[in-house]
Image (cartoon, rainbow, N blue to C red; front, side):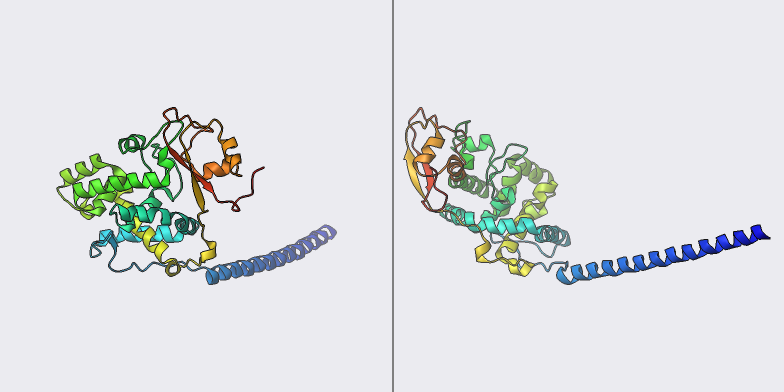
Length: 315
């Protein structure tokens, strides 16, 4: 009997202990549930995700989008969603556009290119001097052969695909050529992305004449819609939930030009003569690809130098 009594007492202790542990765990679970609910509540109150109302009368360069076509509208909707809710990228594009659009816009206008094509540069490079896997380079993503064909100097010493004004001029010539060939700015834009070989092949095989009737590869099939979405979001940021002020935007630093007609042995020394350092010189002249300029032919180059007071003076 004594043994049985001891066993029963032990079981009682275990029961009490397990009850206490269960109670403590229940309280902890309740506390976690409250905390999780509070987090969810805070997130939902401060950040709302919703479908996007697509504007009526969408167009690219004045050419209307067939918005009665449901498949077209699904593709439009995709680009609006992707580019609206990739907020960090959209904010960067808005900031950079304020700095670079004033350079691009007058060159487009001078060459008879619709203003919408400044957003093509945004779609191509994000307004950054990037190099693609295929080695397309600069804001306008120009291939080496194309750049040389249109008169850009491209070598180890100088690469004018990085020269914003000159590369924009080349893009204009390219776009005007293919507007004349295909008859629409929409197909000219598609050709800019994929090349004439692909566009000619698809038009021939599918026996259509319009971009919106073509079945294209995914990148080019999305291309014009992406440009339209970027245009709409950057033009009306507040409509898409972006709170950005003028003071938040990037601005161009005023510069003056220095003409060079002879070799430059060392650009670090050259920069110091104007009170700046090598990094600042390259920032304003990314087309200079080496720390020196060969210029054996005596060609005239124009180098941008920032006005005094915008950078710490180099000593």
